[in-house]
Length: 155
Image (cartoon, rainbow, N blue to C red; front, side, top):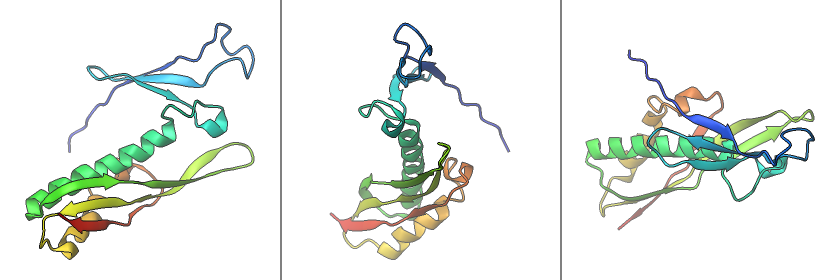
């Protein structure tokens, strides 16, 4: 086994000049800076007073799950000789909020749309998905179920 370190800098950018002196007196905006990569401007979920035009933590988690799944899918398809021409996912995360404001994800459904070469074995292409949760760093790290419903087409 080997251990990996990941770093980033999260910085609150929502100080309007008076800090958190009043609940409505500051923005829920922040930035993610990872060394050598573009800064990502973010905000809280709009349901909690965030800017709806910026990514929020829930968006980023959903995107991370989807991207990790996609990258493993492309790897396994390539090794199996299944030619993928296009891959697009529209994942759906379902969350709940308790009366005291605490929230959590109940589950995520990945909904990839995959374009394969003509004559591809769709059953073999679909079987790849089940293997991914054994290796995907992100899916193995969350405690809620991550499922998939894939759709296939051919070029």
